[in-house]
Image 1 (cartoon, helix red, strand yellow):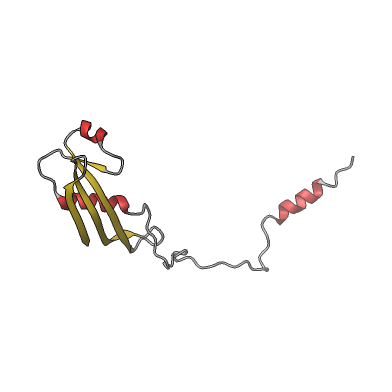
Image 2: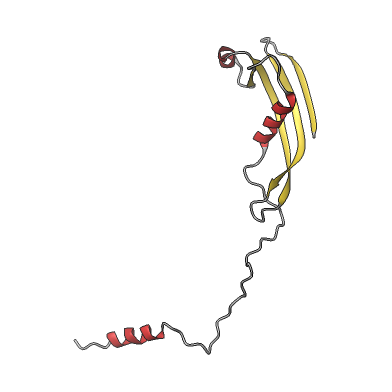
Length: 131
C-alpha cells in the first residue's frame, strides 16, 4: 500500500487533507468465487470540520471529514476512502467457470421413441373430423 497525504489550510482557513492512496486488495470473483486481485486507488480531498454548520459552508471541491473526537485514525480514514473506490463486483479476466457438476452430457439417440409422438397422433386424428 502506498499512501501520500498533505496536511494544510486553504484560503478560507479550512484544514485540509489532500493526497492519494494506492494498493491491491483481494475480492471474491463473482464468476468462480475464487480470490481475485483488484487495484484500489483513491484520491483524498478532505476538509476537517467540527460541526454541521462548517460542513454546509464547505466549497464543493472538498469532502467533509466531520471530527467526532479530537483525534482521528489515519489508517481507518484511508481504508474507508479505498473501500469507496472499489468496484461493486470483481471478476477474473480469464476465469473458467465450471458449468457441469458431475452430470454426464446426454445426447439424443435416434432409437428411443419420442414419448410425445402419441400426442401428435391424437392431434392428427382431431383434424380429420367431419364438418
